[in-house]
Length: 406
Image (cartoon, rainbow, N blue to C red; front, top):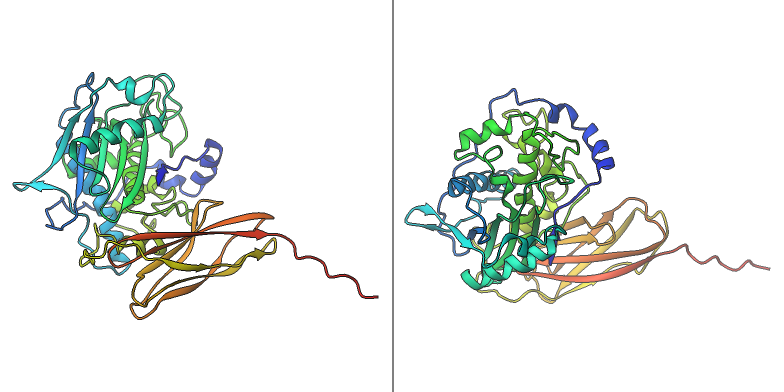
């Protein structure tokens, strides 16, 4: 399932920024908290990093060191947030060889315009063109989790960032998926070759001339806004590649909402001044079962669980609460469930399933429902990291009036 980086209209951005304006407008005044460097965890399922360069482009200098720094910050988001939520997680495991992080430099078969479609830039075209070349060279995304940095953006004016930029992610199986991101984030003004220098860039509010960061929404956006957009987008789309849906319930804090645009708050030494961004408890339950994060997943289990999904067939307008239920055939088949409102594209609830249980009943709270249809998804994950889904549609209509008694 292909997922797109959230994009918020400028008018809404202005409203959202009211709540975090003081933090975003000022440089850091506290000692930064450095993420741990990446290390080989020797897990059976590893993240594979790819640097994709069209045949008419040149690699950016020091791209390997920059990608290593970028992924150190991204990994820290997963490690620290899941640990804070009580999970024993060492982090994502990345491909290493002879003690060094592996970044596959893949030269595209075509020129950049073939991939980005300039001047009619098309992110879906890039996905359809870049992904197959990666798979044909390195192996299918069903059996590999790829993070691809693509040098397919152009210089010149753009509504935001750079023309030809993209950020997309898709979950394929318990063993693989793909995220593709624009390599503008590897530019010298945004990405350093050491963690220490990157922390300084996170603190830098120097305006970037004639450019708009999507999370800022105004011309000449501060440097750190672009870094948050770029580094945060990698974390966000990697979440999609691991099976996570959007969660807009706490949009300014959740990574799977627009919280990733406040990423630098995670690297302050005083989190009480501004809460760190992270994953909702419902998305964290799913992450904790992933083969790429769980410490002891059931690797012999390759079959997604089939479960029954029970939901109300009809609700009254302005309803704010209702119950959802999933139940597997046998106890222990499910580890966690998540419920999603497909109409609004957001998580609405979920729960953990004990090994002795078949499923769970969850009471859901939502904003007052409008008349029409509420499309629902139930996502279940087992202890092998396999994800299965079921769907339903609820009619939101006023109850029929009873006939008047004579």
